[in-house]
Length: 79
Image (cartoon, rainbow, N blue to C red; front, side):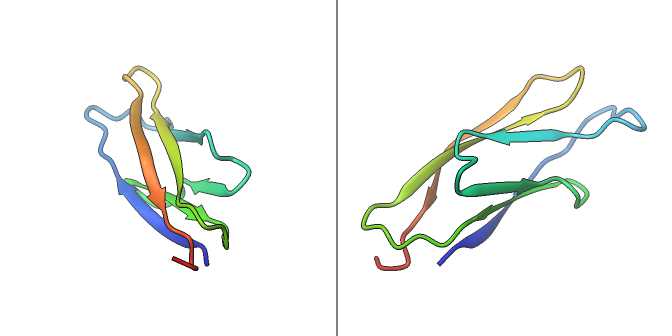
């Protein structure tokens, strides 16, 4: 089965009209939403494989350093 994880974030000295962007190296099975305030929400599609999957998510905000979350772990529903 799939699942959703929330990655909280904050921006110091935020600029009105500028929002965070998020990307992943696992676009084929992981979707990202930045619609909720101060949350990057990531949702994994269902997976029946034998091994856990990992992904990296990068949060970007204009004028700030990127924030990288590596090796996010998603377990198989058959584990």
